[in-house]
Length: 409
Image (cartoon, rainbow, N blue to C red; front, side):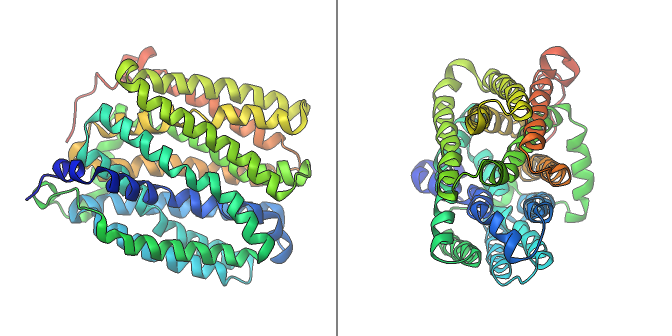
């Protein structure tokens, strides 16, 4: 049987493009319909808080689904579960397009999310199947760099669809994307050979999760990344109403403001791939956490005082979002490097914590919504400060250091 590393070397470009497409589905499913959120308030006769729940309920399904897909893939391989997830994503997208009430939309968003999450969680595991720690961090940064085209173009494309049709057409486009990705799987190699798959029955999954959660290395990276993701999703849920609703920015201009953040994210991911061989993934992870903490403090001040208007929000948000390359790629690669035979389960736990924090912050934003940017600024700022505090734990408390805990495989 061909070694997965040899397959990746022979088809590296194709593998990177396919994996980046799979990782982008979470962004596509969220960012494409962001310009339509204010429209949903009117068309479905729902208040702002319930419409914002379409993001948090999506994250609930996204988090819970990952708990299932990872262990299945450790036992059955990566390609089959990805195909099943994409099919479920397409069905959920069609359901969203046909929803006639906000309750129906919330239910279909959960179904859509359970399917969506198979792509990102298993793409991360596939990178771990093929590459060692530092190289994994570089490749994840490269994947994020490529996949950033989706959130860059998502709000802009969503705004264009909204100008020419309705929000239902946006979900129709998502269904088409799912079917296209499903067809493209014929070119995706299997990276987990049969001899490396788990033999234990799937019912042992929760015991396996318990073992992983007791490892301080996984917890450190998962919680720091979770705080960062929590801030990101508070930003995603809050900016349509902060920019469009409070500051009366046009939907197309909102798309541009959103896209500027993605350009910063792409630049930092590119920089991360260059700096890893020189500085190492751990140091870059902590530098990224420091940047987002500083940006979070600035955002708290600006959102509370109203200083700078739109720019007072946009500039700190830019510096919060851009270091994603330093935080996400490096923390995920570092965590997965310790669990080569549990890459799917470990990736599932990382994703569940990351997106589960997004559930909490997006829901909290809906509960605290007062028509001003202040709740969003407060949540994003606190998330950035917490990310830095947890990222520094390996230095301050050796018991949490990734170098002190025994390896499990």
